[in-house]
Length: 311
Length: 191
Image (cartoon, rainbow over all chains, first blue to last red; front, side):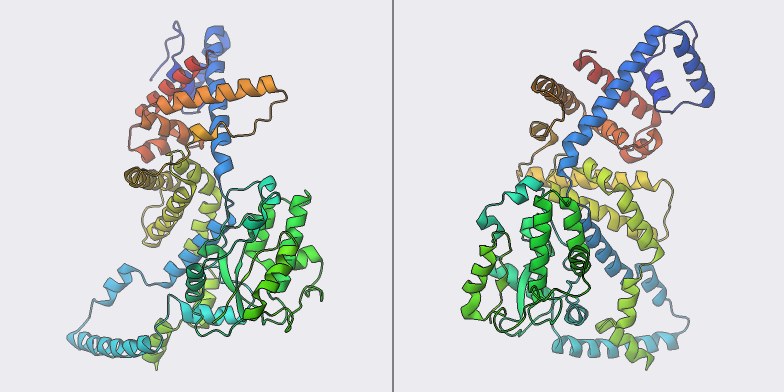
C-alpha cells in the first residue's frame, strides 16, 4: 500500500490497519486526511471500531470467569523452575565429557565408577520418593507446607458458591490412596498415629480442591503454628468472605502464600491466640477420637474435615 | 574431600542448595515476570481452543517451563511474547487433538456465554445483550480456525508482526484475515 488514491473511499483493510496503528507514518497521515473529509469512511471506521470493542468485550466476558486464581499456578511454576535451575544443563554435560588428555579421561572413568557404587549404596539405604530428604528436613522445621509440593489449588467458585456449600461438600473426606500419596510425597514414613493430619492448604470452604497440590501433612504436635490454629484462620476468613469484608481471591492467595502471615494479619497478633492453639491430649486425636474431632469440626458448619492419620 | 562433597550434594541437597533455591536466578525472575504479565492472556488463548481449564492451565505451565529452557540455553530473546503465544498455540492444538481422541467433552465459550452475568440495567437490555453476544460468538465459531486465532490474538493485544510469528503466516495474511473476520462480524450484527 504505497500511496492512497484520493478519489476513492478507503478499503476496510486500510481502515483497520489505520485503527490498529499498523500503517507507516506517511500513509497514516493520508488516511487521517481522507477521514477528515469523508463521512462515509468515517462511518465505516466507526463500525469497525465498534465491532472491535464488542468482540474484545465478548472475548473477555466469556473466558475470564473460567480463569483460576493465579497464586497456585504461580507457586507451582516457581517450584518447577527452581527444580530445573538446580539441575545441570545438557550443554554443561557435553563440556564435561570433553577431556583434555587420556589421563583425565581415565580419572573421570574411575570417579564415575566410584560415584555409581556410592550412589547405589545410598539409594539402597534411602529409597524414598522425589526430593524427600530435603523436603522432609525442611518440612519438619516449619509449620508451612513445601511450596513445590503444595502450591494450593482452587476450583472455579464464586462467593455465593463457597458460602452456600452443602455440609458434605465442606466435610470432604480425603481418600486413603490420596492420603498415602501425600505422605509419600513428603517422605513421611513410620509416622506416629495422630502426629499428622492431611489438611487442605486452601480450604474447600474457600474454594480449595481435593487434589495433591492442595494437600499436605500438617503436624498436630507443633507447639505454636499447628492445625488447630490454621482451622481458626480458615473459619475466620470464610466468615469475612461470606460477610463481604474480604475478596475470595485475596483470601485464597493469602492462605496459599503464607497462612501464618495471614493469621497474624487477620487476628492482629504475632502469636496464636490461646483459644486457637489447643494442642494437648484433648485436641490431639487418636484412632478412637476421630469421630469426636469430626463432630467438633462439623458442628461449626464450615470447618474442614481433617483426616486423622492412623497407623 | 571435594568429591565427597559433590556426591553428598547430589544425593542430599544441602543448605547451600536450599539457599540457591530460595534465591532465584535472573532467568527465573524474568520468566516469572513474564508469567505475571501474560498468564491470563495465554490461558484465555489456550481456553479458546475449547480445552478444559485444567488442560489449559497445564499448557500454560508447559509454555513457561519451555521458555525457561529456551532462555537458559541462550537462545534468541527476540519477540518473546510472540514466541510464548506460538508455543501455547501448538500445545493447545496438541491437547485438543488428544482430548478429541478421548472424546472429552468440554464447555466452550459458546456454552458459557449463556451462564455469564450481564450487568445491563433491565431484563430487556440483558436479553438483547445476551443475544448479541451469542450472535457474535456464532460468527466467530463459524470462522476458519486461523481467522479465529488471528482475532483472539489481536484481542489479547498482539501486534500484526507477533500474530504472524505465532501462526506462521505473512503480515499481509494477518491483515486480510482480520479485515475479513471484522466484516463478517459487522454483517452479523446488522450494523
